[in-house]
Length: 171
Image 1 (spheres, one colour):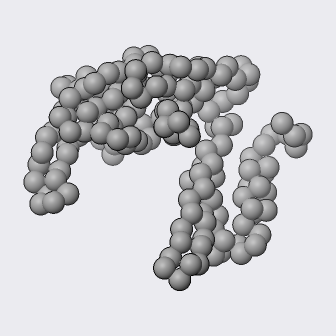
Image 2 (cartoon, rainbow, N blue to C red; image 1 turned 135 degrees about the vertical axis):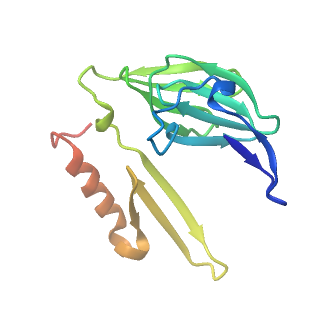
């Protein structure tokens, strides 16, 4: 893991997996981290190859805290309180306080739920200086934009999500 200056591109700090304590995939793998890294204020949050969650101080390059054996499937998101929300391989959705490094809430999913059954949904808005606004919906990394689908963008995204369900019943 490297931290570079945005001013001049010089190396500020680096941390190896051995220093940070996280597990990497085999050397033929493209990435040491399962899915992504999330930045909140001055901290990086990452999930290693075996599902452990780490908080790295982005200014100092030190390991602030970690939660071992959390069993994360790798996808990190933030809720409106800037708490970390993640799904686990243990059929749970956890909310974690980034300040405390502790699980603050837990939702148990039905035992038949698989991580493939969970849909990651993001909406990103965009406005230009001409006051034109657009938005993009991402469902499991598939992009739906009003530029492509016009006024039907929501119907297209809903159709995609409904098509992923095993049964057509409502939740």
